[in-house]
Length: 141
Ligand SMILES: CC(C)(COP(=O)(O)OP(=O)(O)OC[C@H]1O[C@@H](n2cnc3c(N)ncnc32)[C@H](O)[C@@H]1OP(=O)(O)O)[C@@H](O)C(=O)NCCC(=O)NCCS
Image 1 (cartoon, rainbow, N blue to C red):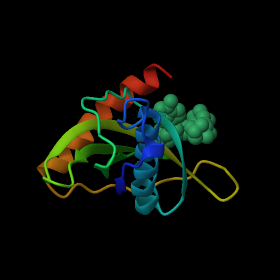
Image 2 (image 1 turned 45 degrees about the vertical axis):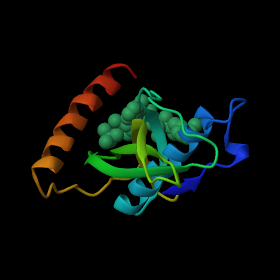
Image 3 (image 1 turned 180 degrees about the vertical axis):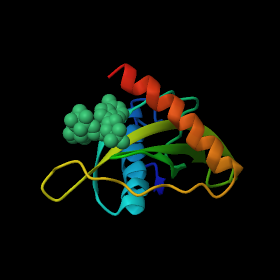
Image 4 (image 1 turned 90 degrees about the vertical axis):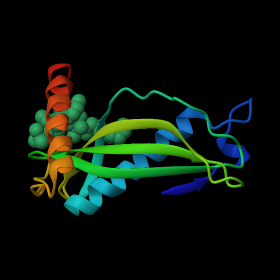
């Protein structure tokens, strides 16, 4: 998902507003979750969100999301955010986030999600790491 950072997306010092980044992370993550399970989804949690670098007004914000793991009724989606200077093409890491989405039936009941079949070692590593984060999340819920 690609967004041009306009004045209405920025704070008093002309860089992107953190709440705007969080909202776009949520949207980009939800798209991946919905495309995977083909159901309505709600955000159950967003893990710690750290902003490593700002994005300037007039620059481009790039969001990439992927489903890391799917369990019974929930999925973990990872979202990576980068800022791009449109004049140079240089990209800087802004933030990364892990979100958990829960799938819903049309009547609002929690819905089962499909199995996520890993295709390579990277997929297997992501799923394993997601399992560790899930344990931590559910312990603290
Ligand atoms: C998220 C929500 C559906 C969870 O409902 P719940 O009754 O507590 O959860 P359940 O026990 O039925 O579990 C449903 C799934 O959610 C997962 N889950 C619940 N709370 C969670 C949390 N804090 N973090 C991660 N996963 C969570 C469970 O593990 C389960 O997934 P699984 O079947 O794959 O294990 C419910 O709290 C809700 O609707 N919250 C509001 C969501 C919302 O409106 N979000 C938008 C912004 S406010």
